[in-house]
Image (cartoon, rainbow, N blue to C red; front, side):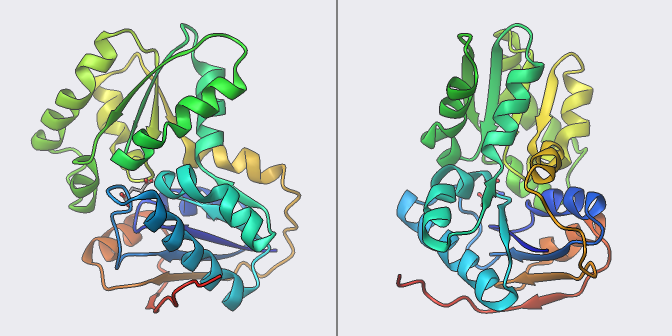
Length: 260
Ligand code: DGL
């Protein structure tokens, strides 16, 4: 079976890595829309349009049978649209993350951090409320500065630590026991956050997505072809690709406008 994975840029490589490790014989085609990153500061219309274009590229060129939206921002606005448009299974990262947070939270106080667009969409708040029968208190916080820190590989830097404190101290003091990393860049900051807040459960949907893929009846009978594509040159992509994945060459491609 061949699957496609896309993200606005490098963040989705955290999902790619976990899936690649767990499904060695699966053919995987990753697209990072590096020409238009970040999606997190865009409008719903643009996030949906970009998502349609990424999905169409992967479907038209590689005949993928399932699609993983490895971007919380695109998952927040486009999973249903993609499923309706292309009629293949589409797995976003929001529902798996929300489900895992509901499972591990004991005090029913959950924090969500993500891009401005993800927070504005309230996708996690809606997903958590639809999963849980208990009343759950969800606090959200956009953390846009984390994305450039990750792209600069400042993963354990005093400046990153200071910004993490600014963003998270108040949320942690308010009594959350679980924090959802609602952006696929953020798992690279998990060791830093775990060091700062050792008592908080940190939910990384790239880890829980494997369980959801296993339920999708994936046939592991392919050769394990791996390809990575980007829409523009990206030094951050080159650096992070080497940290996260096997050494797969990255090819630059051009996306066609999606006109329906
Ligand atoms: N990887 C994106 C996400 O998960 C964040 C980066 C962006 O703003 O495009 O939301």
